Length: 399
Ligand SMILES: Cc1cc2nc3c(=O)[nH]c(=O)nc-3n(C[C@H](O)[C@H](O)[C@H](O)COP(=O)(O)OP(=O)(O)OC[C@H]3O[C@@H](n4cnc5c(N)ncnc54)[C@H](O)[C@@H]3O)c2cc1C
Image 1: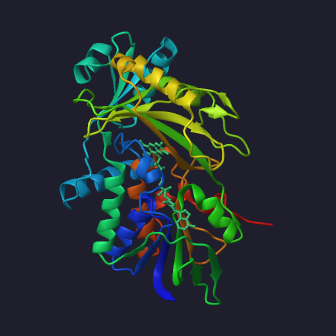
Image 2: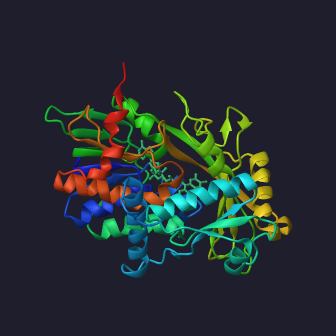
Image 3: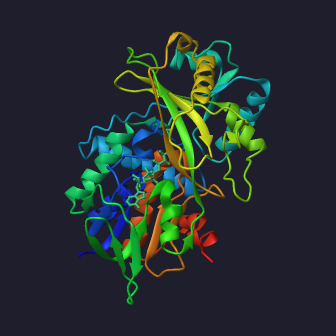
């Protein structure tokens, strides 16, 4: 039996960041990962980092995005990890008059609340990103947004955690969990058993399954995201690229229900909207994705959705019409039923915590989610913004 103070289940960006920030503060930390660190969503995402500034009244979203931006910068600039970080900015393409009116109002609202966004004419957008379609009606510009390599960034956090004394066990799946009389835990894997005073669930889209092992209903569902990549090409794209189509659709109809998280692209098999995000990597691949489908633990990409996404990307960047798809892949995102993250203590147990529900933007928000949870565990005080992410709002005992 290996004893540890704090045991984390899940070696994605949320778990790796929690481990790093706990280890830096001197805690004895063990992390179990069923496969390899960054082997799931945290290693296969688009690497787009969302940030719009702190605003004049910083909320959870400001903390998660701006705090994570600082952690990515610090990995790249101060700690010596080349994670391919660039504060590239994002352009969000506007295709229709309705999208233009929606984006204009959104930009005015955000700027009035202190956020760093702008509305560009297509000519202005094309001076930043020459391949942008001249037929667009304009672009929303988010200059603080950034990008990094997801594998390298997640592994950098894991490596920094290990340098500070955290112990990582890849290929160790938590199969069973028992609670001892004193409230501490025994976690069983095929190879060995671990004892831990405190348990942190960072199992991403598998948090619901972890909950079942503990007799809890944790309303986090797996949502498939899929992407495609071109062959490596000379540098052509400089920002990360998105489209206003889904933003307007979800503003009008978030689409959530009793068993459905908000902001999906499909209901059942029926497409509701097209979502788009992408960039060119340092190696030259142009990568794009967008679909968000609730179809269980299916990780196989779907060719029709990929073709629709490619066509959408080519509406924004006409050069892509001539650029064939070289490879495709998919991963599972942890969507909570109400769309908000779960970061904090699970009240049904005294020493059980969770950091998850980071949905489609967990790469960009995971580093600070881990730091906020680590600070909570270290100090015993919950940062006020974590009230928005309190697991008590939705975790219940299984009947
Ligand atoms: C195609 C795609 C594109 C995306 N693009 C972006 C983007 O551009 N920007 C952005 O911010 N976000 C993006 N996301 C979302 C982002 O990747 C996720 O929100 C984030 O990676 C979630 O991190 P996590 O650590 O919570 O989960 P994960 O990365 O899934 O990590 C959880 C880990 O827990 C492990 N695990 C599960 N059960 C057990 C067990 N019983 N024992 C041990 N280990 C276990 C799993 O193996 C896994 O490695 C994208 C996601 C996908 C799929």
